[in-house]
Image 1: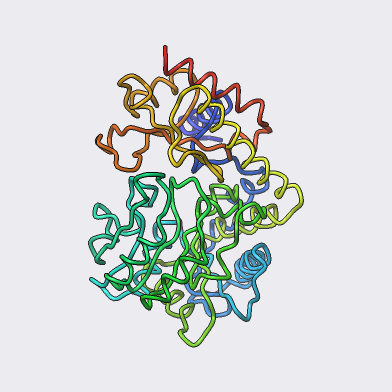
Image 2: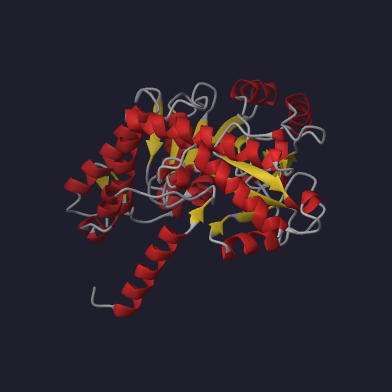
Length: 390
């Protein structure tokens, strides 16, 4: 590479990644094939529109790239092209969620999502997000006793507030979501049901987490977490009399975006093919095993695990209560200094600032990609314990 400054920084980041234990729940390591697609000549092509309906010429090949990504997305999640449509053009998860709301919920109408500190995402209607400014947020909480979703209370709130759209999904909730109950709640108040499976999409693909597609009207997901792909996103929508897919497609283009990033879409296609393999299913199972091992060992060592445990690729630890006055930011800094990368995270009913909350969020997807097993997670938990108690 001729640009020595950037080359040096890339090499430094590669070295950093190899030298640490990565427990960031929203990160993973892509294959060389995914990297090849991202760095390919496809990045040179511009082509607003959709396959067969571009505003630019010379799109015959990139049309095939996009159609292949769509085909592989539907195949991975066992969906019929007669019943489901998928848009693979969203640049990342937040724009994908924003596009759904723009397409299906009139401005100022209500959208219902989980409170951020309880496990929700910024784009699920939090007040600091544009999704909480352009639409009226109705936010549900977990139960204070067990820190799990209280579906009875959620239904009561939904019927009272009558949101236009309900979001089932999380960025830090560690247990399996009951999509059937969410469907019943959406039906009870006349809302659309959207599932944001960004964090657990790879677990759904690996058959270790229930599929939301039987119950949802719309499903959004990023690709770079448990799906082990590039930074990108997809929007799945039912094909029926409501024409949700047509509204969403028009909102992505021309509503919000211009020309698709074809190199990114090609990398998505590669990752989707990799995820539709026996090896990936084995990987997904190991992710869940590893997270449970990490959670159980930390609990044995005296740390309070939020929600009492985990069923997914992540968990949260209350370091403030058990850490003798250590906050989440200090804990994350201490771990990073020792080569363990995590992120500070709010916990349900947190009394501390989001900038220095009471908890940490830990995930095992990245280290599982590197070949870690349960015994490794036990050792990592013990190392975390020693560092934080020092």
